[in-house]
Amino acid sequence: MISRELALRNAGLSWHPESGDRFQLDLPESVEAEVEADVFTVSEMTIEPQRFPTDTVLGFNGTTEWALDSVSIGDAVWLPREDQLRELLRSTFRALRRLDDSFEVEIELGGERRRFEHPDVSEAYGLALLELIGRSR
Image 1: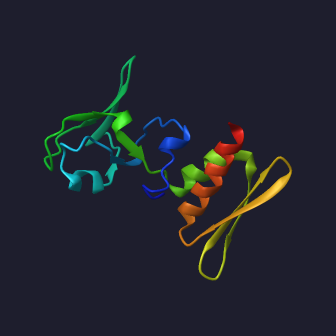
Image 2 (image 1 turned 90 degrees about the vertical axis):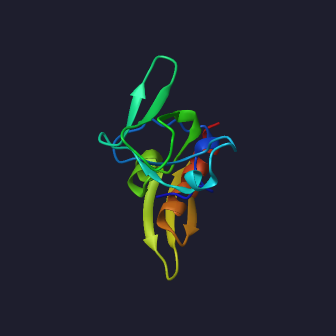
Image 3 (image 1 turned 180 degrees about the vertical axis):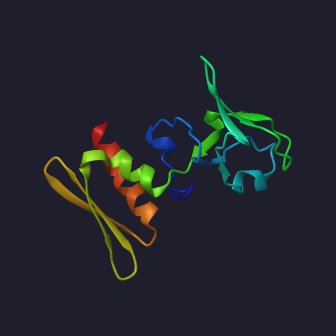
């Protein structure tokens, strides 16, 4: 799972919540800071995406940790998993390598091979995806 610091929210990537997706909340300061540190998982049993014409809302069904019943998807920070990041790289992905103390993701953009290294594999994928998004703008 990618870190909140590298989350792709500000990169313009849109998220369509599905079961198994993980996220954190980014709420106004009136909500306890501990809630924003929690990682939640979309699940039909507890946290369910509810799609409306104007917004998608994440409904918290039967959770008792805190007082919110639902939040707008705009108040959630998606934390994609390694497989989701790899899928988003699509045909640019070339290789994943295990180095001595890190992972290296290799992609190809415009005929140029680019490598992104990080101790966490999801972060290496995330760095590569940020480069892809940046180049496509």
